[in-house]
Image 1 (cartoon, helix red, strand yellow):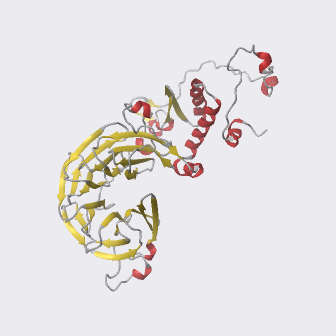
Image 2 (cartoon, rainbow, N blue to C red):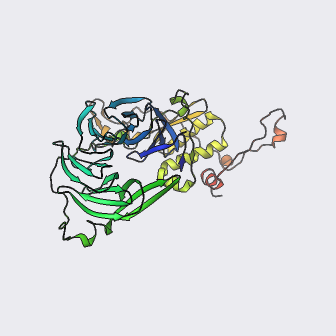
Image 3 (spheres, one colour):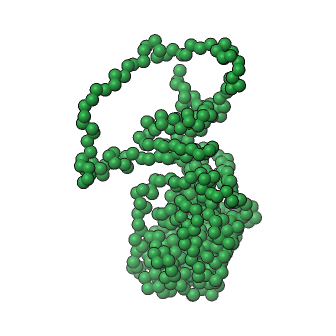
Length: 455
């Protein structure tokens, strides 16, 4: 899938925690947010004066933060247009920005060689570290402990205790560090340098392994299923490299006992852990509630229009769409191919909602249609929590007994009889300019499965 919309080069891209949204920052200072399931642009955020160099999504909220070459850090709400907060403090390009696991702090590193910790609750700098001699290229919070790692062009990796706000360990001469990521369990840190992967520890500082990967100027690394995946690019080419961590120290069987470092044990220092707030239940499965691009923008943004080039629809559906949403969207698409009347389109959703135990609302403005889905199982009086409510008492159906409509069954003579009509030429006077009509069915297989029975 290819998402377009930016008119200048894109310098950074980031997925949100649930991988529902992706955000890209351009050299023009614009942020664009796409909904991956709907494959459409849902928000354009303008505010930075120069290129955006780094982005990070809040761990469980609808916020994102961006760092720019204009030396500012900005906080955004993906549901709204306009910046929420602007933080100024760096004296050069902001190269890296990260939310803490609990979403209360932001760590930033810049060209001014300074690492800053910002407290979002009071909107000010909590602490700054000036231990690097050259620009800070990346920062990374430990997944559990109050520990922060930073990498720099000065060829070092520093570790900072966030309880006492002091430097606790330094690994020097690892090479100019381009990216960092902790192992998911927090036992060690992976540092991406030019052509090499460095696996380092702290307290005491130690270099577990130096793995030649020859990935050039690696841009980012991530860990999944005992494999480290690194990505780099050159001109218009992107290269992806996979490293089997089972063959690297300290994870390989040969490194259980090493003459230099001794047996591998996790870092023993016990620190306070981040209190990770659970994603609010109302946000766990909620799609971004936004208006269409035409309604949510002022019409002055030259980058509003965006299209998604989906080259492999099957893979796209399996990755970004669930079964229920896939079913809904296929029905919508086929129905729109047959029906050109927007009111009939809205009525179609009323019929569809009877089968999904959801309430589906539809509205439209000009040529745009918005569809909203409400899970009735989470609403009173249907939710389990509303069985006994202190204000209304236990839920019981309305007890008044009234006469019911007698629903007459369709006469047998009409059950299978088709409408007996004459041909178009005979039944019309020939004056209707819309007499001839065709249905453009783009996917015959889906059409037959949905609208036609087996016979």
